[in-house]
Image 1 (cartoon, rainbow, N blue to C red):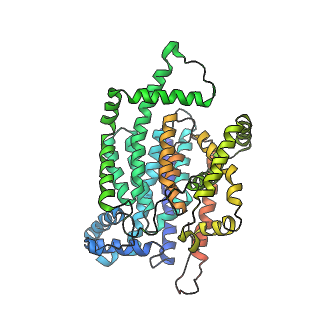
Image 2 (cartoon, rainbow, N blue to C red; image 1 turned 60 degrees about the horizontal axis):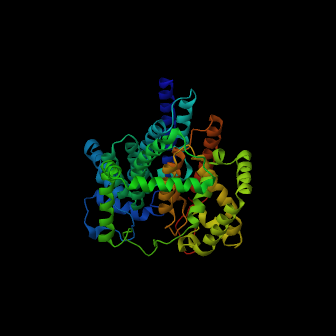
Image 3 (cartoon, rainbow, N blue to C red; image 1 turned 60 degrees about the vertical axis):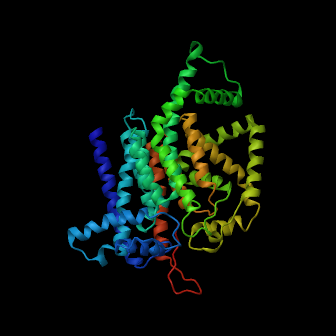
Length: 473
């Protein structure tokens, strides 16, 4: 089985890379000039490629740190020395974009290793399921699209996944170092370094909690309702945190992440904020509906696992059983939608993104829609939490706290911001049956085909500009 799994993996990776190369060729022919955010990223990378690293050469419109440009120079420069290529060739748009295609190969391998580490290997069918799951996430539409443009998403994903893998193997110094690399690509990746530390803490808390449950004749008194269980867990956490032995043990395990956290705090103080460059368009706010949008996004892309008649019946039964609780949750959710819904100026003005049309033709046209969708948001959130019930309560707590911190402060609704939390979530869902994986993979392939076809062929122009515009995520 292990040998067969190797063949499956090699075939999946080879076929994916071949298709990606063909698509990359189509992108290169269609887009000979920088597009969208590439107008900032590509010239900056080319300045680095030419050896101009001074702050005076920095584009003030760029809001992320220079990780992508530094890695790109480290990749393309040796090519000029080895093959004798000119500066014009190695620093060209095509070569710089190709760096992301290389990152995508690394992401494929990391996803596979993570599935092997996270998911149990005690089923005969798990080999093909792991390879199919890897292939499915590797072609996840919102991630796969950016393999062909010079954006930070693919490299950001690579270093974050690598850090997570090293954390799971207990190599925390390397994990923190890779987390720093991820931070250099996108500042919000510091939260996923915190998640890695939280993963360690959650594991130790779970072990201690299991020991606690085995006390008193291996059984605790029956739990009456969710609040009784919540009180017991809270009491356990308070008792655990009062032990110097426990705290010192956690510190010894997580000190590399703590050091990284201090470096991040120093950066924020010296920089005067998280965002560098243009801050006017990236103001933090409490945009609570972003969490609901992420739930909807996850439900849409994971519908073979999250949406079924039996799940819907279970949810409705639970709602009826705990109707007062769900009424309160609904009321709070409606209040959050009412008071904390924001529409960023980019969302309202940039008609090259799919979110523009969703907002304009649904949310902006019918004001009541955002309230009518609240029950769907609650179902999506419950379904996501239910799919993670195989993980410990402490792991879930760490994940949802990190998810909240990553998505809620973002004022702009953009699907790119959901890629990393979605991938982390999907990695930790128990391996679904092969039929559902094939369904999921087929849907991703269809979405990708439609997206690429529209992007490459359905171009348009703005009235006041001669530039060719394209639809994208």
